[in-house]
Image 1 (cartoon, rainbow, N blue to C red):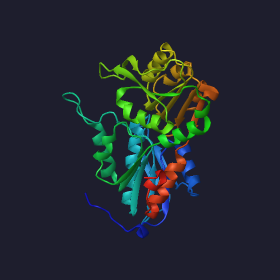
Image 2 (cartoon, rainbow, N blue to C red):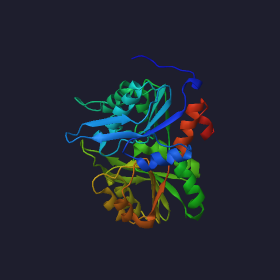
Image 3 (cartoon, rainbow, N blue to C red):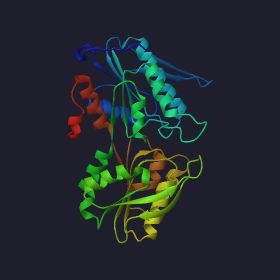
Image 4 (cartoon, rainbow, N blue to C red):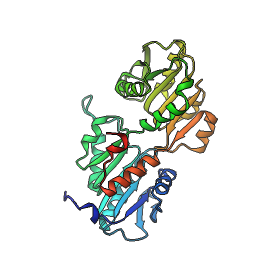
Length: 329
């Protein structure tokens, strides 16, 4: 594949394009940058084929396609790929895929015979479609960033959640404890505990098949009489986090808070989570939550926007400035 390299000053102006998956987030990013989203037509034909046409030329411009790849996964993924190719064929100087939530993140290795590594396939398709760079938030497995051959920014929204909890909750909590939903999230859970300077506990669970269910067995650590902050990277069916709440309550936890980054909320997950006896549910807008699902949670739901962070990273990428400086790295 031909490498397209340019000096930063050769990239032209920032041009923002949005798919149909997360229009509110795309508009917030555009507002942060004081830009308008560029016009495009996205048409879904009766045979489920997609067609995209740009309203104006992007020749020589620095283009960003904002598209999360949550449900409907395959339509949203194809929208992203077709948009990238459309920009490439219109001679954009540089094209960045901005993917707040990257699909197939769990399929990151051959952990049994005769299975694919679909996460690698997805990253290959993004490159072949025309992306020169990518941005994404909190992939389920860190090694996914190694599947890309193009440069990119792998960001975390945990900073946003940590800042919110510090500013609004931490001082009022009694004997606060962070709880990781499983041992696979232990390292990231520990980072939350370090940021809050509080203890951590873990759920030990086991997955027995290829479906999305897992059995929570016990808690490693003490939560009796404590306010518990249960953390995870994404909530899909809600089974793991519901089991974590149940176990925490059985072990004598006081108030329980849920904090996770990607609100996938498949099937009836929102309805099931809304029934949990938790004080507050804190998440982000990497994946849009429907008004109907938001209504189920009422005022217990807090949605923090990742738009300012993504907007700032886009600006710094365009200007050739450090992204790590944003996080004192």
